[in-house]
Picture 1 (cartoon, rainbow, N blue to C red):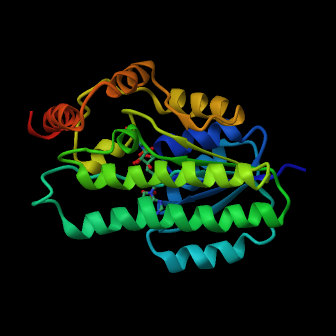
Picture 2: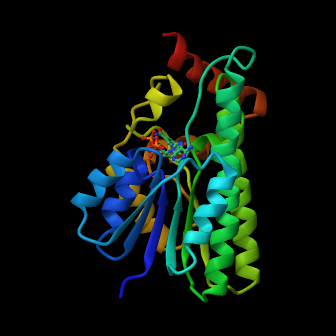
Amino acid sequence: MKNYCLITGASSGIGREFARNLAKDYNLILVARREDRLLELSKELDTECVIKTLDVSKRENILVFFEELKNYKIEVFINNAGFGDCGSFLETDIDKELRMIDTNVTALYLLDKLILKKMKEDNIKGYVLNVGSIAGILRCGPYMSQYYATKSYVVSLTLGIRRELKEGKTGIYIGCLCPGPVNTEFNKVADVKFALKGISPEKCAKYALKKMFKKKAVIVPSASIRFILFFRRYLTINALSRMVSKQQKRKIYE
Ligand SMILES: NC(=O)c1ccc[n+]([C@@H]2O[C@H](COP(=O)([O-])OP(=O)(O)OC[C@H]3O[C@@H](n4cnc5c(N)ncnc54)[C@H](OP(=O)(O)O)[C@@H]3O)[C@@H](O)[C@H]2O)c1
């Protein structure tokens, strides 16, 4: 009998591609707010799909949902739901940014905590993949400051937990997927256009899974972004923030 894979943000983009790729080997628990999208996806997949319509930005929803997961053996968890926003920090919308913290940070943290504890209790040497971003590695992102900060949290949390899991000899993997631009609905939600060429969500998910099963810590799916990250080490923080600022402004103002 197949174990389960839980994916948040499965209704579009990278999360939906994770579902398509993992359906061969796992039963799926698919989470997002748009039920019609999840149902459509489940019809396409040749595996058992549990659909959960859920707003993860509300922490009480997560706690109730977790109770419902008690009897599922979860071997893979893709902690992917998230979104961005763009603009000058003095002008961006407070409610949207607070929702971003609730989704990209609080929900991601709470789900990691609950699922990792469950994996240990269930004695499963499973896989947890947090979806961060290149933004989380670069850290300073003028005109997308809040988004970069949430993704820095994701990278930092992942690497800390990773060391603890290793030293605790749990056999449980955790890693962080840090893509550059991927052609999904991300731009529409964040109200931006990419300054760099994006890769397809299919390529992103395939690459991420290959590296996840090899237990890589930080996964960067495009060669051009790996190249940028290599040269980042030679830049001062001022030079880096000037460069990112220029790129970010191209996304909104051109
Ligand atoms: N695309 C990029 O360039 C890029 C680059 C780096 C990192 N990322 C990260 O990749 C992840 C996936 O994004 P994507 O590019 O695939 O964008 P997307 O196509 O907009 O997908 C985002 C997914 O998250 C779900 N979601 C958002 N808020 C939610 C909430 N409150 N509760 C439940 N589900 C929620 C959405 O589902 P519903 O709307 O149906 O709820 C959707 O399934 C995000 O964490 C994003 O930050 C993206």
